Length: 191
Image 1 (spheres, rainbow, N blue to C red):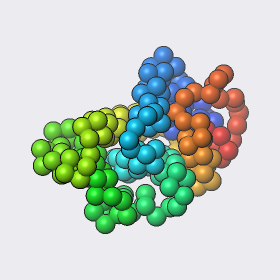
Image 2 (image 1 turned 135 degrees about the horizontal axis):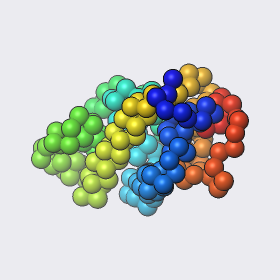
Image 3 (image 1 turned 180 degrees about the vertical axis):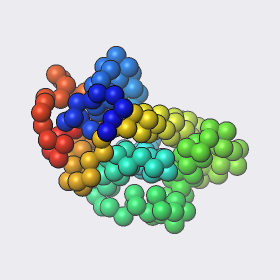
Image 4 (image 1 turned 90 degrees about the vertical axis):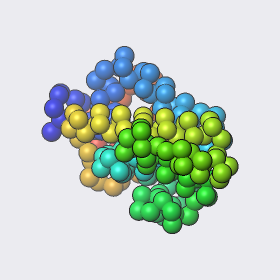
């Protein structure tokens, strides 16, 4: 049960963002820019980072949502699972392995990111902008994870909810729909 009154039909982060629209706007804009904006990293690669950080923070809602979005973008469901299990054996490029390791280090602590980790990423072809955005995506998802868990938001257990949510993330992004979210839609069909 959430620690504050939230719309029952808006689980996870969505209910929190609707609770306070003024703080939600810059968070949504930053997320849209980082995960859907112009980048040399694919949208799928950026979703893998979000899913990895969320899984390491044990935030079920965010892990399920971003794993599903990555799966849709990749057209398969093995890579996201493999990244969360063992980055080094996951079927991603050496550059992506190095960036995912930076994301994982950032999740532990910003100061855990070492010169060696950055050098590994550069040696694998990562640009300074990709390294920057990796750290920022990881830090942003640590914020989201703590926000969701810290206020004990509702986490749907029905996997079909995340099918709908993943599709929404991929096709609409992170912006609030015009007019918000109409109540009272079922948690199973609408975020």
